[in-house]
Image (cartoon, rainbow, N blue to C red; front, side, top):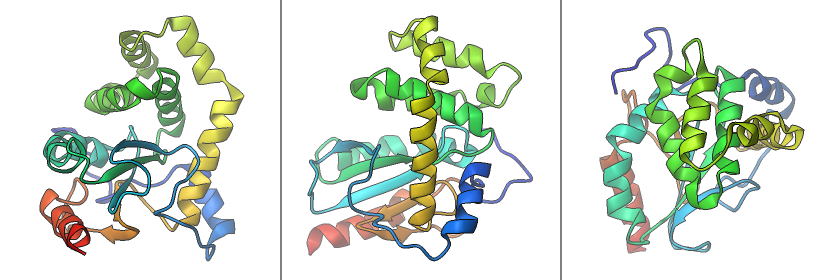
Length: 213
């Protein structure tokens, strides 16, 4: 992943909506490990011994880097064999309107195609930050079987935007302050100095310890 913002911190900043929510919700608790509205999951069924939650955005370069550098090995080691339940939670980062549109397209494509669309969007993050992100959304949405008319309706659907706002607020209530954020059974895993989120080694340490209990 060559795309980097020199002026960005290790983890991407939250969207304006999430930051506004933080001002009123600071101190509120939340269940960061239990099921939440809008969760998208792979691997083991709900109630699995180990649940790994990732808060991420399709417009976050650090998330895109993790998706390229770490996701394939993580998926093979823990998700494909149902050792863990992997839960993906959307948290928009700037440009938040593009992130919201991309997530809406992924959801409109259907649960069976959601992760494929999200990963494809992250792989094209440079275009999402470019002058014509809509063309990229159309191209990737078309590849998932959506027409341009369906994509346009999906992006403009007020219910989709309302749900996206609520997912941002829920993340803030759970104390999430940036992306990507990784939790293993509710405990955050951080790799100091990393520009692409928690490393596979650090995630494995936490996951294997939880599996061994």
